[in-house]
Length: 481
Image (cartoon, rainbow, N blue to C red; front, side, top):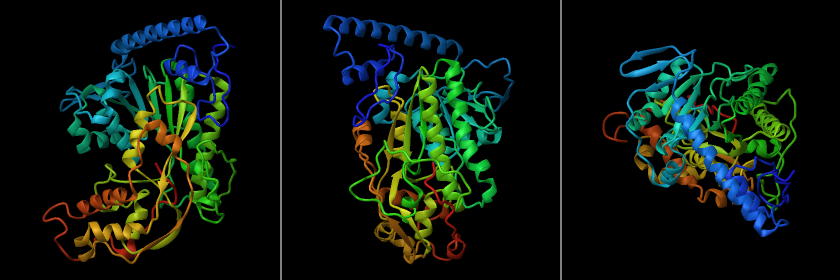
């Protein structure tokens, strides 16, 4: 049918499924792909004009609906007042409406999408909290799906959120269990974009092998499908951004260094690997399988249902950098940051794939993925090559006093598995170079030392390290989000 874009050349990094003709980025893709090359010039111009006019009309309709309905509680909402804060069982927003300060690189996005409503899941995690901050800084209205009222309070108590004072631009919806059928049906009301980050993570907590499917696979798959089905039902969603992982593209044995990958065949965003059912060797293997399964089911659903929206899949490596959710040294040791910190506290372990990415880069990529000029139904890798043990020289050069006081030590080591990765599509699409491993390490160490020394002269006290070397535990065996 003429309004569906035909499959593109497999070597061309573009959308793999069709979208409704009225969408602006579909028109751009069609022109770039030469879809209308067989039609006369007059017909081509007429189609373009009609499509642009239709897109403008629909945009005005969505904005009109948004201004009338966007922040109106539904009939199930119960509203109470606490210290200038409006709290609803379905949605919650602060009453102050001072606009947030913009970061320069997102000013254009705010001008274009300031009235869009973005639903974000996983906003209480490392990547999610950073992405939420960037969304608010860029002027979006945001609805965060969280598990409880306590999570709402935790988000609102963050100094970074309080400093932005987002007012009614930040609301909440409570989703206790993402795997429950219809979990997101009410959360998507009036939403134009979705960023789906929530997914079970592999942590230091031991999960019995017989519960791997229940803990990892089912929530990852069902949570994603629930969100896609809700988006399809509501009819206002234009794009869904799904946070996957590089482990969804790379066989487990290559991530672990058991099997070597040829430098001539780097990991590509178009790579796909088969899902392997359990039982699994450890929680990392189960986590990796959950990401593979989630990606497979999401792409199959998109191809089968052909909804009015498209999807962007982001595949970060080890996400490193300041974690705004951490308020103690122990919390700073959680997540993938623990690999660097454990190394700098004397632990020896590994191997780990040398694929890291700065948390701020991951957040920026999520925001930029909302732009319709970014091709949908496409994967983008967020990673760069790093050598874990380089962190020792970085710490020696940048934090000499912390080493002198034995707050950081040089005796640790992490074996690095080299994994070649092709990120050319990501860099070309988003237009930025990944932040260096050195900056990632400096960000992690700065926060850890700040939390160790909340008062007094910085790095100017000796004594024992509160997180003792013998107590250091690498709490993550995965590339987490």
